[in-house]
Amino acid sequence: MKSKNITDDIFRYVVQLPEDRIADLTIKKLAERFKLSRCHISRTFHSERKMTLATFIKHQKLLRAERQLLRDQNLTVKALATNLGYADCQYFISRFKEHWGESPGRYRKLVND
Image (cartoon, rainbow, N blue to C red; front, top):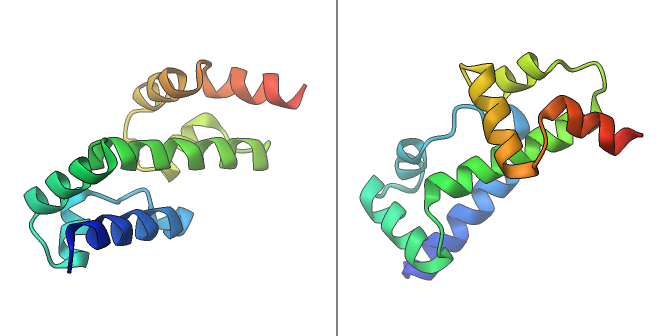
């Protein structure tokens, strides 16, 4: 399998992963799924996509956080953080704010007003 195909396969797999399975997604689990070493898939992904695999996974979690936040008005930020595999709610809030420019609660309010 060519490197490009591995990268594309990993990309598709992560993007299509159901929301309830992204919380525990790790590079190690991807390596096991694709029967490759962690170093190989990380290096290949970075080379092809110009972003680390860890950053890509983080971005996917934050995209799903936005969708869940806007879809379910009753979902608390703490529950959202837990759903996405963040053990520390404050860490999740800081990552969300870094990505979207606002805290999750404020983002929801701004988008829904």
